[in-house]
Image 1: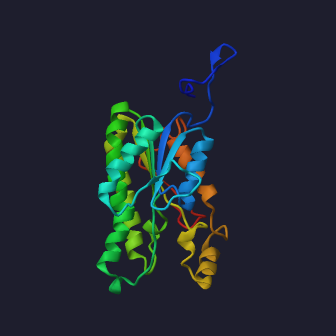
Image 2: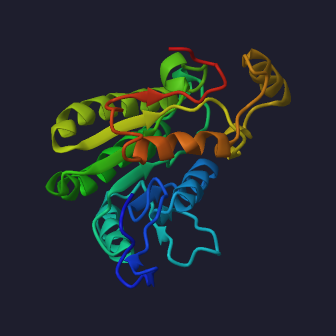
Image 3: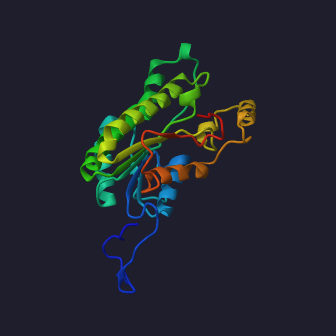
Length: 256
């Protein structure tokens, strides 16, 4: 439980307090306009965090959201500086939820297609983590949550680039977790299975039926069912013992 920011009125002679698990924490959600990023941002706000989102295409109802093209490394520094300004202080919670997906047989996949997938998912995550870790280490408190995928574990035909990028995200997460945990900066990942979003719209009707039938619960998930995992990992004390872990809200598709 944290004291409310300055300016909150006194109640019954005492400073008002909040019981939200993320009360007053400053969070940036990269990919916050996508289905999962938006659900996480909403869940963080419900948990009483201050939240800024950044994405390539932004919703019109969030004027303070930031535009970033994750394929352009030069945009990271000014975007993170602006986010810090909007939040009124250093970023304490980073969620990297940006993602793209397409498909191609590996034998005919253009190098540019492979490189773009790794740039958005893996290099972007690396650059984002680089921007936030110095302030987190200095403050001796921080939470970094990287969004992986069940395909990073199981793979999928014609998705070698996507599966490789997501497997790389998990490797990045584990290395950062060991590096930063002594400074009380905890790094974890969430690896969802298929959920209702534009990411599954590329499936044919037969592929969708087959994928749903393969799920032990018989359906795809919803972004709103995944977002609470991010709140848990970001919270104190709820997330305090999660270090280098990958949570798998994947409908039972991958069991670890």
